[in-house]
Length: 91
Image (cartoon, rainbow, N blue to C red):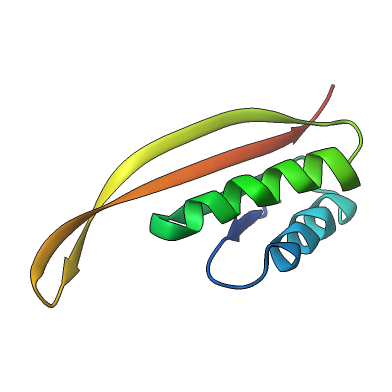
């Protein structure tokens, strides 16, 4: 059974997302992806670092993917940066 263990980071306080990540691992997830775009990217990085340094043992950063997404806005198309930080259980 494949569960989509993704935490989408937005405008809530960082600890809300840290709690979501920790909960995913406590519920048996092998990997958790933290995704954000635009101004929320720094909050996603904070989420990953706080989760790794303060709350999770035996978890490591597996991969960090950066990209640009084209989004339709009222004034046309615009580019928005995005990041995906994948945390995984250490073997």
